[in-house]
Length: 439
Ligand code: UDX
Image (cartoon, rainbow, N blue to C red; front, side):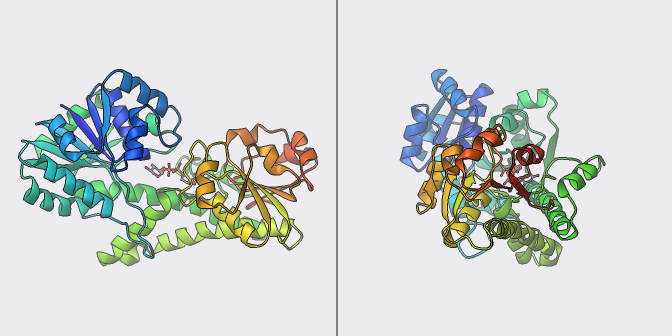
């Protein structure tokens, strides 16, 4: 059984490399030539811990290759092959709904190339509006009647992508035939042997598992951030509140960290696309709460800017602001809908000179926000700053000694947008430490 992976973004590259790691011969495809060229020479065009090492291992083992050519891919794969579609579904411009252009184009090209080549299984991994798989299955029946469809949502977290792919919490398979189930059981045999929970279901349920999982996580983060708003008004401490809540095993500790809130290429656009789809299905009321979840999340960004202004004595005009972090979360260079960059840009708009430092995401950030200044280290960014904003919780920032940072700044004020710095340590070193939801 040969495997192909269509789309070489964060999900696709990880999936291709991990399928090779499981022992399969794998070919990845992307329509962007530069990505294929980079991957073919062992370079991952984004930052994901451990991925480049595994890519090189599998290239050297001869199990992995990349192409831009669908016909070449189909001929190589042959009968009985499995094809994973891992292309993106970004938010449509000016709408909440997901842009399905890339998914539709990928299935269309794949089906045309596979037509007449015997039986094969096409597997959607992209996050899509419920009903997509059924629609695509109809199109496949016209274009390549020997090809079958399955849906297998992906739950990997950036920063832990390899670990999450090789040791997932669960495997969800939306299938319409025994054969499709057997093919996917064969693909994931090693994971199943390691007792990874398996859920076999229909197309619609498999599509919904993904968006409802991400919605639940978004709810959890916005819940604690709503509590942070109340804590600020009441003079309470949301970190102590969260800790106390987390001892109840029904609530738990994870995804209950208050701060600047969620961003990235998944949570924000997924909850919006989910609301849009619910509207089409006539059940928009059922998901109306997600609008509030989204609003709570976006308010955290505004509040952080307000806090920075307060710390700068009421005006950001002409102030120097250091921003630590540009990625939407640590251990990633992904800046899609990054709260850190949103805050940085908004402070810049209010007349401050903003200098950003991120261990991995500065190059991406510079392309999107060329008017911000960028530094090569946290200390360089802090030079003569009136206030430091800690907005992405890289370990590197936690390791800094506040006493060593102090001589570099104009004013020893720090805002911890992620509630991740040691408040007592910074205060003991003479800093004014402020964080969302804490006195
Ligand atoms: C998410 C899901 O976790 C993953 O299962 C899905 O497949 C894709 O979307 P990812 O986007 O990589 O993964 O990031 P995640 O770790 O979920 O974090 C999302 C955002 O929430 C980040 O901006 C993070 O900083 C924020 N977050 C997370 C909080 O603000 N508080 C928390 O307690 C946890």
